[in-house]
Image (cartoon, rainbow, N blue to C red; front, side, top):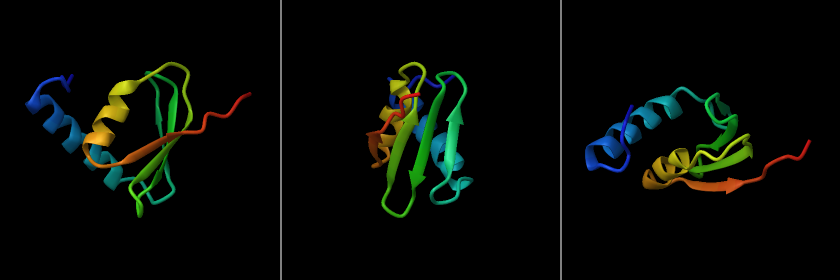
Length: 78
């Protein structure tokens, strides 16, 4: 597990996240099982929208923001 509170951990997390983003199409989604988070990626504009979240997962936002991504939360209510 990467410790994003250390410079090396954040570097590793950003590399891991970039590798993941490279596999997702523009407009594609990523579902994170540990928190029930669903993110939709606008790769052209470096924006990501969180559309679902069962529990807070701030580490994802911290890494994406460190990479220069803008994050918005538009959680759907069921």
